[in-house]
Image 1 (cartoon, rainbow, N blue to C red):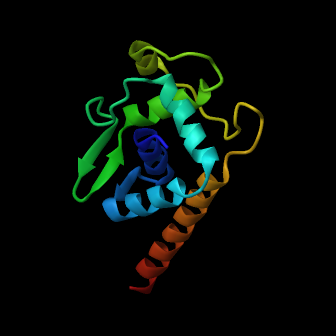
Image 2 (cartoon, rainbow, N blue to C red):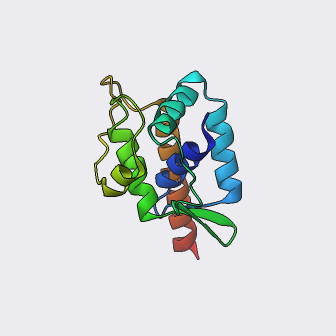
Length: 137
């Protein structure tokens, strides 16, 4: 499993792109134990940008007890996913110019993996709980 790609994927699943460290660790543990599919997918995505450094490249910011994905981080992740079927690594200048959109379907035409759907469901439930607490107050 590629740590940096996993961090980007987790952060992008949160509505505002921000996750507390406890939430990030929990989500990473779930993905790390979800099987070879996730590890293989993150390795393929990471191979597209061999010199990826989420902090030096300002793809992720550390903010008050958590991490938040930046607009540049979202663009890079979209580019990596849209281009994941193309062979060979990409250059950093190409990554910066990219604004490709993701389709939610893997290059083989299969639905997005179970781990991502699980994260999305968890986020929807978390948002519903927060809205319920806010309206109860």
